[in-house]
Image (cartoon, rainbow, N blue to C red; front, top):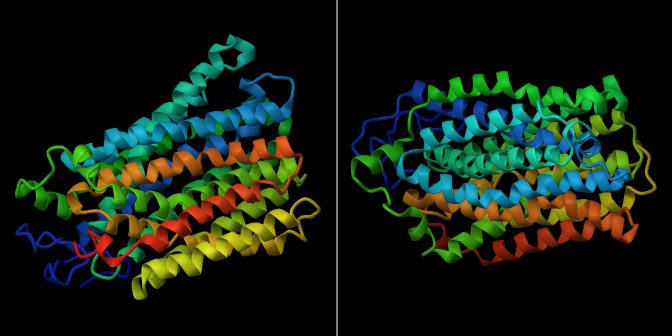
Length: 453
């Protein structure tokens, strides 16, 4: 039987019926119920902490800019801080190139442990860095180096964990299962929002700029130890164990993956809007609402929490809808178009808004964003064969995140500075929606190589 999360727990179905090949299908014996639950919960918990570590920088960009980029102009400081934020995304494809093939060659579990250790260590060290006032130009240099380590780690995380969960999921439940990875990402971001925005509200700008910004980074130490312990208890995915037993793993997953250029492009386009939306709603909105629109920290904190809560609830519902109906059409109509319309409403309403008048467009954007989360990760896993799933996912996903995700706050801030128009970021985000819609319209059933594996 299958549990309600869509994780295979007994392997009782055969290969022609299953959404993935189970260990029993491939001669390795059934997946024990406790094993499936532990694998799912362990992977998700680690992913929450990974996203907290990676995203906390974005929530603290104002204070990081003040401590590490001493230009004398607060707007330039923020843009500089977001430039470093974006830089980590451009190193993520390299992380994908390193860790994606590693996961396809030596296993998903070992790779997940490695990237999590890197992320936690780099994040904690950020909290210990001396500032520009103490050591001059070496301060931003060290900040950039640690952010690059975070980028390498993040480059290997999503593709690997998505593959891991997809390979434990049962027939017709891949969207329901992988949508909870997206929800876990939001939980991690929301945890960062609670810590960073909550401290900003409690301590005030002066104390946060002086020392309070360090605390959220230092939390990564104990959180990282807990997450590593949890992941050490995981068992390898049934599909990978079966491939390994049959000597079916790819000897050169990177080279072999590039023989599927269409699949890589489809993965890239499928997650483009996902990337820009995550960093609009859960990261850049903090700076936008305070520095541009002029909200106080209290309403801004409430907005971010509300958006995260809505997204966490709606992501599994959207994944379920994608499982029950055509995933491509659900993603195209139910999510991408709605997100684009909600973005237009939000950005054109924001400049003259108060916290109460902006609430309706913000809720609309949050709902559309939550519905968006349910299908891209399942689609990504279905576009790739099992032996190349981590590599292809890591490359396609991270290139999209580098080009359209992590750069979103930097481009949005730069557009406002250049045009003096607080609504101008909408055109960038609409462009990312157009890229995803165009890619989704190209996908056909024959492109879903991993749909029945």
